[in-house]
Structure formats: C-alpha cells, structure tokens
Length: 469
Ligand code: PHE
Image (tube, rainbow, N blue to C red; front, side):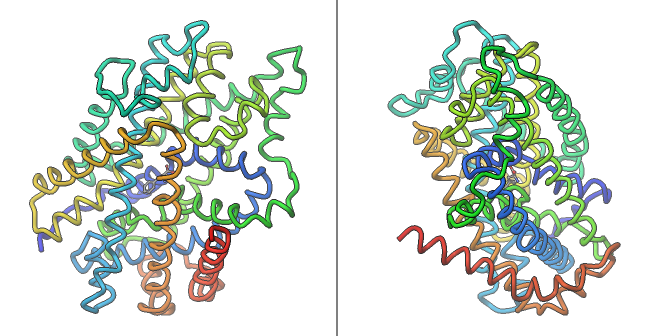
C-alpha cells in the first residue's frame, strides 16, 4: 500500500471543499427541474424529510468513517471499508464508492464542458443574436440529434471545451488535496455565491416584462415553483419520494464515495460533526435559496408554465435559459455570469469525483500519483467519449443520471449507514464521531441512524420496485 502524506491545510478548507463538492449542477439545474416537475410544495415535503432522515445522518456516517479509515492509512473507499469492517470481504462493500464517482464524472464533466462553452458563447454575443434558434444551437454544439457526435473543435462545438475541462480537472487533482482541491474551492465558492446573489437580484426585479401577459410576473413565477398544488395526491406518487431522496443524495454528494474520501485526509482530532453540518447547510442555502429562486421563476416570467414543463433538467439549463436571458435587459452579461457560475459549481464537484478514483488506483494497484492519474484519465476519457456519442437526445442523459445518480447511490448510502449503525455499532460509531467534535450529534439521531434511516431507505426501495414492475 502506498501511503500518502496529503492533508487539508485548514478547517475552513475542508468545509469549503465538501461544500464545493455538494454545490454543483444539482443545485442550479437538477433541483429546480425536479421541484417544478413534481409540483413544488409536495416535492419539498419529501425533500426535507429526506434531508433530515438521510442526508444529514448518512453524511455524518461518511465523514466519521472516512476520518477513521484515513487514520488507519487508507483513502480509497474499498480501503476504508477494509479498515473498518475487518473482514476479508469488507473491501468489496466499498467498491461502489469508487465505481460511482468515476462513472458520474464521465457524464458530469461533459455537462461541465457545456457550461464553459455556453459561458464563452454568451460572452462573445453568440447566444444573444436576434432570431437565434436555441435548440438547434444546442444540437450543433453537443452533436446531439446527429448520427453520433461528429468531432469538431470550434467555439461552437463542445469538443474543445471537453478537452479544456479535462485538463483543468486533472491539473488541479495533480496539485493535490491542499494545493489543488482546497485552492480551487477557497476561491471558487465565494465567487460562486456572489454571482448567484447578483443573478438572484436580477431575477427578483424582473417584474412583468410583457404587459400583454400580466400573469407572467415574478410573484407567479415563484408561486409556480413553490405553491402547494395538490399536496396529498403529489405525495402519493412513489416516484416523487424516490426523486426527492435521490436529489438529497446527489446534491449533498452523500453516498458517492466523495465525502468519505475527502474526510480520509482529516486528522484524528479534526471535528467532523459541525463541519459536516456546516457543509450541508451551505449546500441547502445554495440549493433552496439560490437554485430554487433563479432558474424556474426567470423562465416562467418570459415563457410561462408551458416553457418549463417537461423540459427535463438539461433542457431547462441549455435550451430554455439562453432564450430567457436573451429577452432580459443586460441579458448577455447575466447569461455569461450564469454559465460561469454553473461552471464553477461543476468543477468544484467534479474534482471530488476524481479523488476517489486516484486514491483507489494509488492504493489498490500500488501506482504512483502520475500513473494513477494516467489510468483514471484514460478510463474516464473513454467513458466521456461514449456518453458524448450516445447522448443524441437529452433524455438519454437524464436516464443515465437516474440509474447512476439516483439508484446507484441508494445502494451505496444503504451500505454506509448499515456499516455505521450495525457493524461499527451505533454507540461506538457516534462516540467515534464525537472525537474532537465541536458539536454533539443530537441524541435522537442514534435511533434514527440505527433504525429509521435504513427502514426509510428500504421503504423507498420497495416503493420503487412496486412502481416499476
Ligand atoms: N453534489 C453535486 C451536485 O449537486 C454532484 C456530485 C455528486 C458531486 C457526487 C460529487 C459527488 O451537482
């Protein structure tokens, strides 16, 4: 086993890195898309229940187990499980914590490249040309709608941006935990929040841009997303519960192997309880208060409900929103900073998907850092090329995202909480979490983490199977 000496250089650094992992495309595109699709208020009820019963407790388990594995000298998810479970098969329980982030990276980075590409195309005025057809621009840009993507490398093609985004990710990962990841997140996160607040101020002051359509105003836009519409019937839909729980996992980066890996670079006396809660709260602020108030209301004001319903996550971000910005005063500026915001949010997340892979190749195959990066680079580039080739329509990406980004992490999250509550044992697990902690886990979380979280996951699974067979 190759031991690394890497560590976080400050407490704020690790919190910002985990928050950076959490705040991503999930907050600004996936969340508003889902909330609008499932009827605002009912979705939010299931969402908050999932936050309290899944996101926060599994997050604490992950931080604690990561730090414990790191103290034993392991940083990859299989290594950490091996150190904790102390059974020859233990490492296999951690395998998903390597496979999932690597697979999510393959398509996530592709969308990250769209964001950078759209930011540049917005800045150069391409997106605000009069009479622009956004769906055909999107189709040409991504190669979607063609017979397999053709590879071009111009400003209007995703290719060059995929290359740039790969180079940036691997450059920062190469620089390591404190000089790479921590550095990007310390700069990127504050900038991201400032940009989001500027855009939010713009959206909330949009008023009623078209006097001929008085209903399409900001208040109705907010209402479209948040109003309690048919709450009871909404909550009867099992798909809604699955989507809400999946969003909590995805958005908080919980159950992916990302947090467990980051936490493994903590030291024995470093706090995990308050840090975990702080990073989660930062994510929720960016999701509900920023992500939830920007995209959907803005789209509603200009396009009405019809422009939003059924667009899917990516349709909303790359077909609907450019259209919305083009109609707004100073739209070119706002579109540029919006896609820049998406790009910043995405890169701090994609870095956290690479680190589990690097740690695995270093530890599992005994490779040096450079070789580990090489292997991971080849593997993920192949995957991204496949995603690119097959993503002829946006629905394909939504489908991949559903199976890996929702179903896959359920399994991973279930393994995590069961190992924490039953293999380590809840008393010992919580005591371990409390080492060096600046806040105690509230007492009621013991039974929650031992019984309720696993049962809740089981219930969602059963609902899912019943709804799909
Ligand atoms: N949390 C990120 C987002 O909201 C996605 C992510 C998932 C990041 C898994 C890291 C690991 O976009």
